Length: 379
Image (cartoon, rainbow, N blue to C red; front, side, top):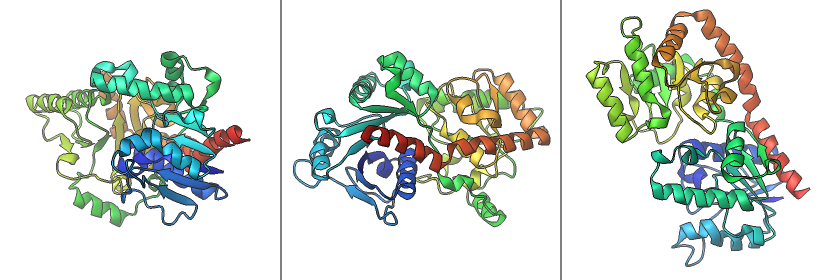
């Protein structure tokens, strides 16, 4: 098969959608070398190096007006290139497909990561909600098959867009394989010095936005102020909500307990993340809602315990390798943090079970589930 992808995120995004795109494309190319893979992207960057993948080819806009109106090329005009390349199947990796692709005879698949903007529209710009809704609904309606990255996302697609269940397949994602590689002590020390990390710390990874719920972690640390002297390292940035969190921190004398690493260091890539994760006491991820929750999986691969929410898809991601809490209950979260910090047997049990659960999300297994979707469409 000639398989094309919307690869904009693979080349432009350093976080979730970018990681998903790069990991899946690389895994498919390596596990199924009999196919040719074409990456449709408005521009090439150094975020994704495909030189070692002989069966992967970049496709960019070549003619006017596509070279100027690149967003229109990606959202519609790319269909002409797909026909010229004899593409058998097109996969929209980030919630959208070209408008009108259903009229070309080319089979299409779309991955829907989450419909959080439908559940919490007040947390988004109203215009963005309308744009997302139009793109996502078009993709769900006209794609030949929909890949949902969790059972939760599948249920949301059915609920919000009334899509028949039989059209949706759950294909779990993996994370960067580097998280499964044990970092040696010398490199850990280098990373600790590079980022001035404390010897013991809790870790929070993710955008500092309301849904990610950093404020509840800060409230839990306040509960633990006289019981535990372990700081929280935060990787991620934000705007208005971050300011609210910092006001709480300052007004309660927690400035020495919360370290915003992204204020001092730039994280254009995640190359140092495995070494940071593997030195953490645990990751704390009390998100109110997720499509999947990739930091949970990254932590399981890193062999550290997880504290996360008992809602949404997070129990799917964490399995038996996590402690689950009500994301809005700071006292419950504080109790979980105290248990992790003081009970070595519990930590070791969670690490063992977490590693076992992580084997359900290997790059090979994730690629196989997606390839099954392709083959069933082109069988």
